[in-house]
Length: 264
Image 1: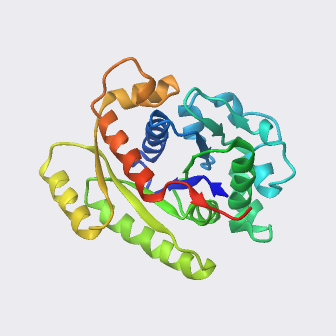
Image 2: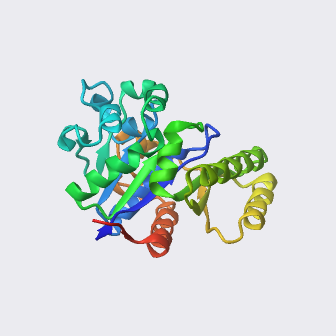
């Protein structure tokens, strides 16, 4: 049967606007008529906040962590929250214990995959977008192994070279350890400003990853306003030129991965 296309948005370097990219990519996919599930795996819950679900972050069990520990034992309707643009599998304060808790579980790196499979069967989603924590480890391993498709936000500054090298080294090790294939599907140069350094980095991105589509998201206050309103930029009542960038990103990813074939 056809399963959801799965994407994870990740970069272990903090401060690159990872969550903003994830939310607005999900919003753009919704604009294309896709039924989207958004998963906030970050224990800090930034995407949960940016989608207006702060109450979920402080909610009593069962929570996302409970569902990861026992994917078949938690009623899915109790952990998935409604949003005008997408369903939200919210983070929770309990996720601060996820790293140590999952390390104690057999196949701890595959728990998200099992949970997403159950959610896809219930919800019939077209696309799953997973927002990762800003560090590597077992939580991010779950996202990478479950989705196998990478969207990488990076700043157009020299420090991004090292962070991308570290990320790809890590992904390479993960592929060997777990016998999976993980593909970079999009590189997002985020908060781009009109500077010589930015121009040089955009050229470097093109040369370093020639087969990966590059998208330039310029620094816009409207992106922060949408976050504070609990939506993507597609729901705010103002024209934002970056909408076109996220629309192009969504179209490209739709074409590249579509819906995946999975066993029943």
